[in-house]
Amino acid sequence: MVLAVVLMAGICMTPVPSEGLLVMYFKVFGVVYGGLYSWSGAMLGSVFTFMLARYFISPILRTRLPVDRFERIERWIAKRGAVGLLFVRLLPVPAFVQSL
Image 1 (tube, rainbow, N blue to C red):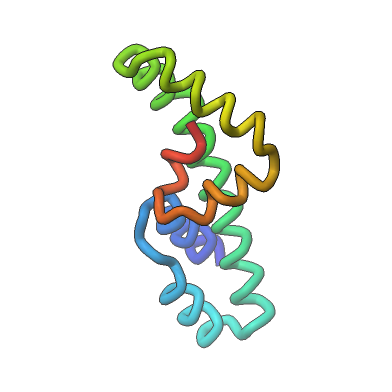
Image 2 (cartoon, rainbow, N blue to C red):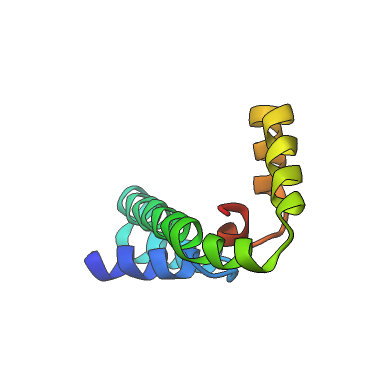
C-alpha cells in the first residue's frame, strides 16, 4: 500500500500519464482502495512538485529569465483568477512548470 502511494507520487511528478497505473491499482486493490491509493499518491506528488518548483527551481529561473516575463505571468493570473488557473492546469505542460 505504501509503495503504491509512493509510486503514484513519483509518476505524478513526471510528465508521464498515470492512467495506466490507476487501472492497475483498480485491478490489484479494487476500485475503492485503488482509487484512494491513487488519489493519495497524486496529492502527495502534487505537494512535492509544488515545493520543488517553488523553493528550488523558481529562484534559479528568476535569475536567468527577465523580470518582466514573471511579472507578465503574475498579472495574467491575477487578472483572470480561478478561471485563468484552471486554463493553465488544463494545458499539456508538466505540473512543475505551472507551479512556478
